[in-house]
Every structure is written in C-alpha cells, then in structure tokens.
Image 1 (tube, helix red, strand yellow):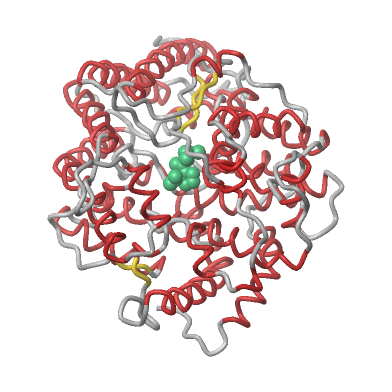
Image 2: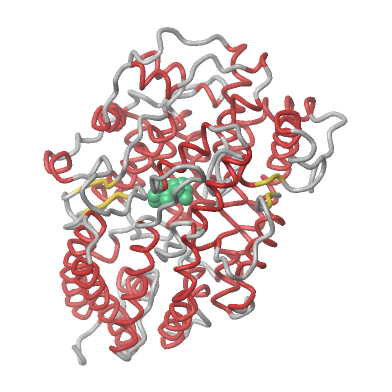
Length: 575
Ligand code: X8Z
Ligand code: ZN
C-alpha cells in the first residue's frame, strides 16, 4: 500500500481488518464455547494474525503523507492504534506467543474448579458463587473463597511474560507501555483523562464510604465482632460475591425491617418457572418497546444461554457480533436470578449498540468510548423498576413508596459497592505494565490497593504463592476494566436524561423508559454514531452534556444518602 493516500489506505486496511476480525471472532467463539487444545490453537492463531495486521497497519499509517486528510481518516488513524487491547510485537514468534498466552490464561480460568471441604464434587465458579450468595457460615464462605482463588496460581506462571510481550508491542507504537495505550483511548491527553476519572471518583466516594460503614456495622452484628472489625476493612468473603464487587446478595442480611423493598426478583422468576430464554425474551421486549428491532432469528439459534454439561466453556457473560453486521449472539451461563436478569440486559445493550453502528466504516464500529458500550444495557436495567415489573406482569402490584429505601439500598449494594472495584483493577494493572509493581509484589500490592479503595481484606493473609488478580476473569482474559467504572457513572447520566425525554418527572429511582419511543430515538442516535466522533459529541447526543459527571447518580441515591447518614450516627466510618 505504499503510495496510497489516506482514503485508499483506510479502504484497504478496513477491508483486511474486517476479514481478519471475522475470522478471529469465529475461532474465538468456537474456543469459548468448546475449549479443547485444538480450538485454543486455532483461536490464538487467528488472534495473532489480527494483532499482527493491526500493529503493522498502525505503523504504516504513520508514514502516510501529511496534507489532504479528511476528518474521518484522521480519526481512523488515531483509532487504529488503540482499537485492540493488545499491540503485537513485530517479531512473529513473539506475537504468536502473546496471543497463545492470553488464550491459555482464559482457558485456565474457565476450567477452574474447587471441591469444597467435606464434599467430593469439584464445583464451577457459578456453583461456588451460589454458595457465597446463600451460605451464612463463615468457614464455608472462606473455604469457597480460598478454593476459587487458587486458579490464580496457575495463571501467575505466564502472566509476567504476557506483560513483557504486550509492553514490547505497545512500545513499538510509541506508547510507554500497555497501560498507557489503554489510557489513550479517550479522545484526550491520557493524563488529563486520569484526572477526569479522579474527579468522578471524588464525586462518589463519600457515598461509598457511607454505604461501607453501614454494611460493616450490620455484618458485625450478624457475624460478631471477632469476624468483622469495628473500623477496619470488611472481610471480602462475607459480601456475597467472589470479588466483593457487588453486594446485593447480602441485602437480606443488612436491610433493617423497615427497609424491606417488598419483593425478591429471584424468587418471582424461579416461582414462575422462568427459563434462560424467557429471561432473554424479557430483556429483548424492553429494547423493542423503545422502538428497536427484535433480535434476528440467528441470535436464538446460535447463542449459548446455559452451561453445557458435556464440555468446557468460558462462562463469563459476553455479547458478540460475529460478522460485524447482524450475526448477534450472547454467551452466558444463565442462572434464574435477579442478578442475571440485569446481566442479560447488560449483554443485549452491547448487541443493540453493535447493530446500530454496523453500517459505519469498520474502524467506527465501536462505542464512543468503552464505558459507553458497558453502560447501554445497564441504563435499560435501571428502568427495571417495580412499576415496570408490575406492567409486564412479573409483580402483582407496585409496592408503595414506603418501600423505596429498601429498593435504593438494594441498588446501592449493586451499583455503589461496585465503584471502587471498577477503579482498582486497572489502577493495579497500570502499575504492573509500567513496571512500578514488580512481579515479586503482585499479590501484596493487589491487596494493598483493594484495601485502600474498597476497604475490604482477604479472609486470611495472602502471600506471593497466590495470584489473586488472576482469579478475576478480566485479568487472565486481558479485558481493560476502567470501562465498568465509567459505565457505572454514565448509566445514571443516561438514565436521568432519557427519563426526562420520556416525560418522567418523579424520583429517578422510580423512572422507567419502558415503552418510550422518544427515549429510544434519543438513545438510538447516540448508538448509531459508533466511534465516528469524539465521545463528548455522543454524550451530548444522548444527554445534552459534554462532560461525564455523577450528578445523575447522586440524584438517584440522594434519599438513601440521607438515610445512611442517619443510620451511621455513632458508627465508625472509613477504614
Ligand atoms: O464483565 C462484565 C460483563 C461482560 S462485559 C458481564 N461485567 C463486569 C464484571 O462482571 O466484572 C459487567 C459489570 C462488571
Ligand atoms: Zn459488558
């Protein structure tokens, strides 16, 4: 392609990348839904080819003549270098090795099992998670927690090599390291973006701190002062989630009687004999109600909705668009719970975004920034209110507003508890990629950061024979994580704007955009922009704002904030 101008260069580059991306997706789909040494090899080979082409084209694009660049081509050039979460080193042996390690780490995570003490059957992550959500027996919880975290040990053996190879590729494209490359995806100077993230965190951490203090004091009365400190970090295995990233499962433990939210979605769904595909139908109906098209027939034929019992699969939920047009699918091991009901909305949000930008040039077939992709389905999930559940016949009647504190508390355990977790994973990885954290310090620094941001601690001291970051999917799978922090802010910003568009004027936590074509159109305009324009323009299309901010989130939780502050009178806050 030497000699081509930018327009011709990108036409050819996008055709090549589309082709290789489809091939990589197909191979990855087969691997993730049927893990064998062969599917692993095929998927990592296809990924290596895509990584190689992306890095090569990104380098070539720098040598294009200056001068007659269209706005779109200039944008494509900057998107190209950050379009994948890895840049391959130019040595083919190294890039194959890198793709191979990532595929292998993902497979090891997916195959992780633990046999709880006193039993004989090795359990999957879903089964272990179920115990964490249901058991109130600290020794059982600790055994399950510790047992799952052993999966990190295997991953540790290749993680350092992956870090080195990934950095080599990033440096060839003049990024300081892979973390710096990840931070360069936000249409602004990466350091300025980190300041934006700090600003958002400053807006929300007082609310997190209040929630943390409240939960700690309630857990202390449940589990006793020997297990839960008065003013120190909360033991991570007592929070109802393997990574203590969301705490909604301990709602019944922490909610005082007067804050009962009046219903339990899990029980409602189970009581009706809801199947995994019924769960997805509910979510699809929501998207259709705001004016979007039903999912294609192929979605139902090709998606994986349950864990198959005859083979190993990657159960961590994901959404796919295999041909980058309309071959939409999800892959998920659905359990009939309120939590998975939300996750399904999350995944379909990805699918509807993918479909909305499918007609753009290939390099624009992405979200405005990665937080947008993660926020769309969650925004819809915020509209899953008691009013909505009553409307679709899942709840017999709408609970009155005396139940609102319970509702908000449950939501806060889901969304506010998540915020520091959303930050900490990449804070840690950024320092690993930059070399500030040495391999001999992986686990110590991991817990230092988890404690600093989240105020949680492991059930017992951990040492460097463990690798606890490796027990969280996105680390072995090389998925950047800051996106989820951003999404947790953005979804409330979207929710507030769309509720207004839908003509809703009551408290935000009661707002549902179900059935609002106006809200759907506004959202649809943003989705259809893909990544063709800098994200502030996409944000403006949906909300009228050009800056991310936590005002929507703070407004949503304002009544809870007041209530928590009352509950916390006389209770130590902070850790
Ligand atoms: O990984 C996911 C989605 C797929 S993009 C299920 N989430 C994060 C996680 O599970 O850790 C959604 C929220 C946070
Ligand atoms: Zn997602």
